[in-house]
View 1 (cartoon, one colour):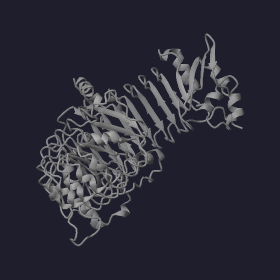
View 2 (view 1 turned 90 degrees about the horizontal axis):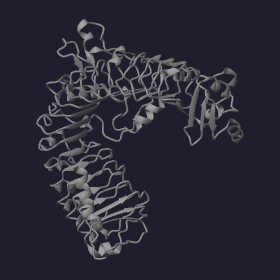
View 3 (view 1 turned 120 degrees about the horizontal axis):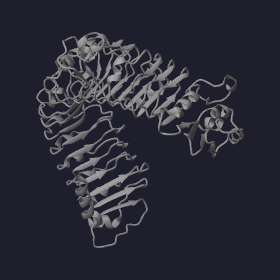
View 4 (view 1 turned 180 degrees about the horizontal axis):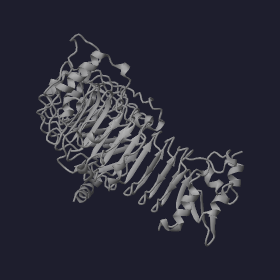
Length: 607
């Protein structure tokens, strides 16, 4: 029904909507039709609207997209577009918004996401109908004008990822706001009261909030009950530090984890304990203890808790306190030695734990704590589980063999995806993981002490293994369809993958074979011939295994290459290059060979 309604709406406004690229002429089949919606791509350095559109004075929507070179807006442009309701300049290099913005009194939606805007004009206070203001990731915007507190119809304000010094005091008076991304507490500098800024208590009157991201809790003078009465609040993110603090993620040395976490730099601020004084640690613990969170939450993220024991707001993280919680992120719990009891949260679907530096073991306390079991299901609805950048984590156990009753416990019955990223001391996956009967994807990066991945009968879609220095064995994964391996130098045994259809070999993925060919950049994995043999002996019904690899390895496996003798001993294989369209297909019986590449051509082209 939604698609049908959208199609009807598109049909009704088709003649009133135009999409052009910079420099294109505006062509319309009916010259009497008035243009109300204009989308312009590849805009030049200055925002330009066709003169006939300006003359009509009927434009309701102006979208400028895919225009990375756009830097300027003519000072008088908005004086001629007084009927605008929607204005979007996201992902441009515009650095100044003219004062004539205040003429757009009909404007409902203003999007300056990821622009170079330095400031907003005070005339923004004239936009009395504005409902959505998107200033997300405006990296040069340091302050907002006080006039923004006049936007009494504002419902959504997004300033997350923008390095503001403070928010104007009157934000708490905008009582219609339901989405507030980037509520910044206090001021970056001690202004001796000369500049009024926001405190936690300013949230007291915002009773329509559904989404709230609070930053710079370290500037709060005390905790507050302001959140407790937010019965409509669904998603809450609490950050001790201000936004836009660069991440410090080099502790474990895993480049993949660093690259991934860099994209989430707001969630992973500097984690060295040297950054915090003992006084700040105590204030952190006291403030989180004073917070009271509403039971209506469906999503909760806490970043940078500095206590050794869990905050009281997390001690209450039990089914009765958070019956609707579906998403939970615990990031930078640097001193906590034990994770909270989370396995009995009835609706939890996503759990992300990162930078829990003091965690050495994860045991059954995560599932049901020290209290007697009241249910035989742990994490009944959890679909995604992630552990990231935990430098001291060594052991992971579900404790399922400790008691007779625990033997009957259903573990992770809904789990679909498990990620373990940059946990260099983790020695083994828990034995009870085989109880995750719906597991589709397992990704392991930088688990340098992990020796094997085995006995996961329900793992189906993909196993991704990269940068696991001591991994030696992958076995007994009878339902697995895709295996991706990279930078696992000791891997020597891969077997009992009877449903495998695709294998991807990333560079430096295995030991060399044979030793006499040690000069090759991308060696043939020692375990591949045996895997091919198993695959063609009836382990799989999917036919010849499809192997993706580097172009150099593919050429080395061709007829004139150094690995051709090894390939000949296997029943068959199809290989394709990751970089392009090169391929090689071989079957032993009946004999078939076809390729558009050769080792000779590759060897010749490398000189």
